Length: 123
Length: 444
Image 1 (spheres, rainbow over the protein chains, first blue to last red):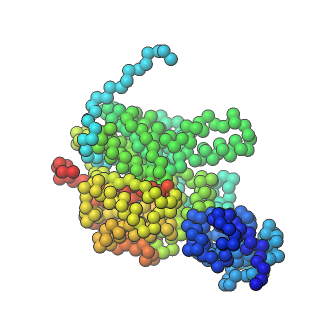
Image 2 (tube, chains in turn yellow, blue):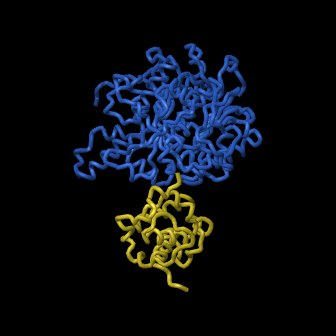
Image 3 (cartoon, helix red, strand yellow):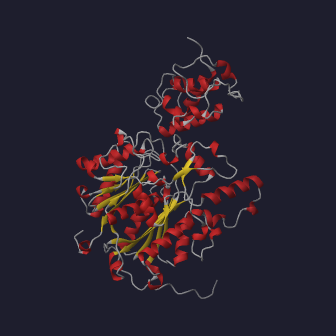
C-alpha cells in the first residue's frame, strides 16, 4: 500500500478530533454523512476548517462532489496542485509535494490554460 | 430619591383576563424591497416583480470577497421618511424601517392615539438581529483604536434588540405591553401570534404587531455566507436568485424590511367602526427540540405546529385555502415544509394555494413573518394570492399543485402563515377572511 499523503493525514486527524474518536476509525472510504454521521452544519464546519488550514476558498458549487473523506483529500490535493475547481474524475494521489507546502497555493499569475475562478461556476 | 412618586396609572378599562376575545387586523404597513407602502407592495407582489438586485458591497469591503452578491434591499428608503419627531441618527436602520411601517399601519387603521387609552395599546415586534450596523461599526472601531471612551454613546440603545418596539411606543405614545420577540426567522410570526394572545387575555385592546430587520451588514452578511445559507449561483442574475421550491434553488437571499399589522380586539374595532381586513384566529408555537439550524427532516414538527394552530383557531385542515409558506429557498428547508404540508393536508395539499413572499423580497429574517403576514391578510382581503416567482422547474421534492408563478384567484377563507426559525423554533398563525357574518358569535 502506498503511504498516505500529508494532506490525507491532516484531514483524517482533524476529522477524528472533531468527532472525538481515534484517527484509525476515520478511513478514506468513509462517507462523511452516512458513516461518520456529520450533519449538514458539521459538513460546513469541516469545510470551514479545511479552508482555514489550507488557505482555500471552496465555492458552494464544489460541495456536491464531496461525500467521502477521500473526496475531501482529493479535492484539497487537487486545489493545492494549482488547479481551480473540483478534480475531474478520479482522485489525484500524487500531490505530495504541494502537501508539504500547503501555503504555496496557486501561482499568483494564472496560467493561460487554467479555467478562471468565476467561469467554473454554474450560471 | 425621596421626591413624591408619580401616581400609578389608572387604566380606564381592564377586561377580566381569559375572556377569549377575538382579534382582527385593521391596519397594515410595510417597507419592503418591492415597495414602501401597502399599495405599491401589493401591486408589485401581484405582478411578480423581484426586489432582489446586485449588491454593491459595503464601504471598504469589496463585494468580490463575498460568496453571495445579491440582496433584497429597500433602495428607496431614506431616513427623512421617518416622522419629524424621530431623531433618525439615534436609531439603527431596522428601527427606522419599523417606525415608517408603523405610521402607515396606524393611518391605514384610522387609529387615533389621542382617542385611545394609551395603556390599552401595546407593541409586540419581532427582530432577529437588531441594530447590527452600529454594532459592527463600533466594535470594529474599538478594536482598531483601543479607546473605549470613543465608543458612541448611542451604541447601546441603538444595538439593543428592542429599540424598534421602544421607538414605536415612544413615537405614538403606546403605553401598554411592549415586547420584542427574537426567535430568528420566526420572530415576527410569533409577534403576531402573541398579539392574539394579548388581545384574548385582555392584556390590551390594540397591539402594533410585526417585525423589522436591516442586517445586510458586513459581518452579518459574511456570517450567512459562511453558513453557506445564501444563494451564490445567480450572482449575475439577481432577480432569479431567490427561487423557493425550484430545482435550481441554492440558498436564500438576504433581505431587509419591516411589516406592521394593527391587531385589535373585535369589540374595539367595531366600537370605532374600523375597517376589518381579517381575523387573527389561531396561533401555534412549538420547539422542534431538534437542531439549531436544521429542521426535523420529515416535517413532523412543522406539521404538528400547523395542526396546533388550526386547533387553536377551531378550524379543520379541510378548510384551509391558502398557505404563505416559510419557503426560504434553501436546499434543505423547502422539501421539509412541503413534506409537512403533505403530511397534514394529505389529498388537499395540492389544492391549497401556496406562495412564497421571499421569492420576490428575499429573506428578511426577523421581519419575514410580518412580510408574510401582510401578504396573507391582503390575500384574504382581495381574494388574490401573489405569485411565487422563479418557480420555473419544480423540484419533485417540493412540488405542490397550488404553487404558481402567476397570481391566483380563489375563494379564500382561511390562510396559514408559516415561519420557522433557527434554534429549532416554529410559529404558525391562522388568519380568516372577514365578512359581516364573521362578526356573529360562535362557539369556541
